[in-house]
Amino acid sequence: MKIGELSYQNIIFDLGNVLVKLDEQATMRGFEQLGLGKFEHIRENPEALRLFQGMGIGRVSNREFFDGFRKLKGSNATDEQITEAVNAMLLYIPDEKKRVLLALRAAGYHTYLLSNTIDLHWRYCVDHLFPMEGHTVDDYFDRTFVSQEMHMKKPDDEIFQAVIAQTGIDRSDTLFIDDLEVNCQAAERNGIHSFQNKEFDDWLKLVY
Image 1 (cartoon, helix red, strand yellow):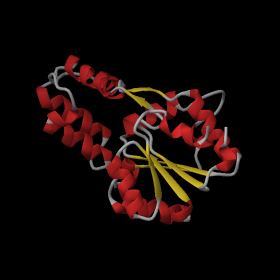
Image 2 (cartoon, helix red, strand yellow):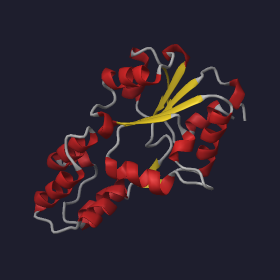
Image 3 (cartoon, helix red, strand yellow):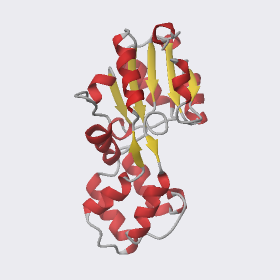
């Protein structure tokens, strides 16, 4: 492992498809079972998409999301059933990636997380996916930045500017890792180097 050979002192990680393995179809199947209808992606249901997007930047609360979901199709699904369907896409974070995060911090690198995510997803990751051998999410990152809490989202410039301002990092000494090209372009636009994680384990090549 070439942890000490990285060219950057600060590394900002995305969550989905960078750290967390996703299966979005699992959530679509869960929604179908709750009577929302069969579709391949949430964007095919504009009303449901608006709920997710609103929750993603903190304009829709969990309670409003649950109630709004039930109204979409007159569903009587419980909060717990909706939560289970929403979180079905979150499969796992490989222990290998958690160990790399720990090794980076131990080697003196500053690690951050910047994610467009909703509270239901974030809580599930914190409670169920990040824990390993006594470690919690706070052991992997200097700070975490979540869109729902910040009321802003990638790829908007303001979220990158907020991270820079709140951490005091030198953007020229910072690498941003994300699976989406548009988010990587936004980082570059704000003076941060980027690496597009096209396949789930691509970024591990930077440390091996």
